[in-house]
Length: 232
Image 1 (cartoon, rainbow, N blue to C red):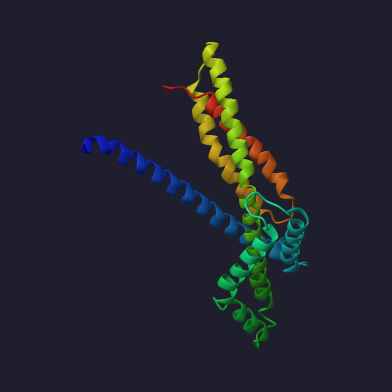
Image 2: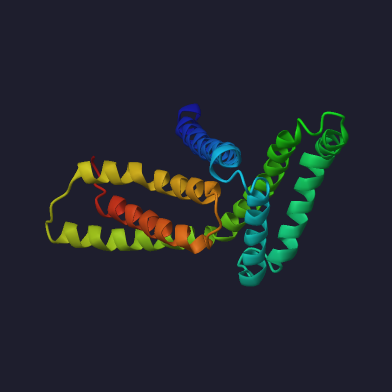
């Protein structure tokens, strides 16, 4: 009896490990994207757009919010995307910037006797606030576009299975090399699309990045499934 349940336990551990691995990679991607966004904005204030200063990140956040309000009215995941976004941003503002006394620190910095010498530091800290809120907004948009990648994956699987059956019944050439390389491209395409969109220092419509990424994601899955062999 114990021997019969051992494969089941191994399979369950494998699934749990896979899910934990995916969650870890998603979290790592988000944290790396946020850090890169902050560093990019700070470097921009110092060297690329010093005349704009903190207004660059403020304008970026406003442009993203205006695009969302004008274009995202409905979603498969929520009936009121604008209301959900507002609630999320309010919670982030409260937890990250108010409860941690970050806002009080900014107020003290502006009113301190050395405020003139520290005014640039104030710009960097306020830019961090705007970039963080913009980052949260973009993550929210990515979550709303999750069905796009699910559809791309489903289409890729169906297309790959059809091509695989055609190849098998037609005695076509099978290549484990193609399968392994396509398999290793699937998730990097997904994570790279997220990183590119989350770290852009300027405002672009999400579909400019996500539509090509979804196409490449589905194409990679199609090639992987189409090249799959029972014995690799």
